[in-house]
Image 1 (cartoon, rainbow, N blue to C red):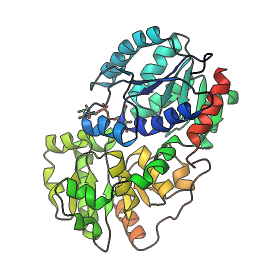
Image 2: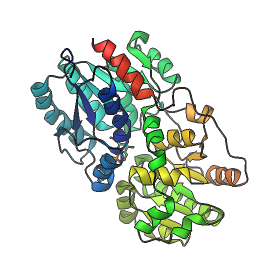
Image 3: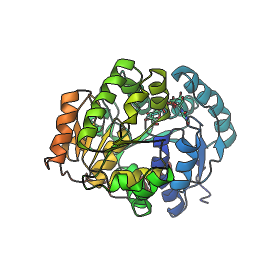
Image 4: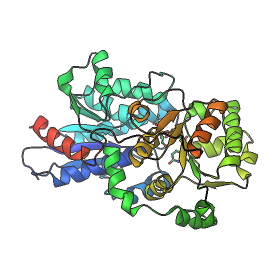
Length: 376
Ligand code: UD1
């Protein structure tokens, strides 16, 4: 351990944080001298499928501290994380607190640290959808305002930060740590047939000549309103006429489908419904899909890196490079746009795209090198 640096307290809470943190911890370990780290899991996600399985797949060490906050309203969850995080900070006195992404754990821990004058480091800074109805957008804007060192994944982020008064010398373009994880695990990814078999489905489903589409959907704006959710499920019913679908269901979506009585939509013969998948299963399912239909932020980036066409069921994206350079097309919640997007891809008019700068598997190394100098 470097005698001069106190540990970096690294925070994860929800599913999309884990793939961002895994390469950072490895890069800290490999840095010469080693950068000491403490891993804090807030417990925002706690299920085997949403948390433990991903730790194993990503070779993340078990957390040093687990705050076990669980679910709640945004206010309750954020407040509970803050209350439980403060004593951990007092006890360990880290050199800085490193947060990733835009979930409630990100803003909660940043806020506690900044009030205690402990430097905050934000990885994946500066992304903006411009849509304040998205809880993540509030988390992004506020976390960046109170961060001392900001690492960006794409060049548009710097412009967003400057517009919000954040000085350029706090910002470092390091690249995309989520793609570090993707490239690290692509070889180990599970074949889609095996994933289906594991859940009692016929592996031949994903080996049909026309291929299959992968669907994920969990944004409150898509799944919390019964009319919107019903509309999107009806569109999927039409899509399966053209292409068999594998639908990995987030717990929020699963419970809303049950609550709104929409189960009938998922029984179509050409749809396989799976519970939330591990990381290696998800990478395998994405990599072999004809197309991905999603509202996830991470999948927009991962499909661009894999060169798989992606249709994003949102009105806006905080990751515009996936549209400008990658394979992503925004189709919103418009049934015609979604169906046209699917047709275009199936008829060979999908986007080929290219991999953006610094999405090269070395983003975490760049962060470790920069952070070491910055802390020094
Ligand atoms: C959170 C993130 C979102 C991210 C998503 C990935 C925020 C504001 N949102 O949304 O950006 O894309 O994670 O999954 O932080 N639940 C379980 N098991 C779990 C966790 C949650 O069943 O392990 C259920 C609970 O019913 C809970 C609901 O899912 O109420 C939503 O969980 P929550 O953490 O509040 O937000 P997500 O929708 O998962």
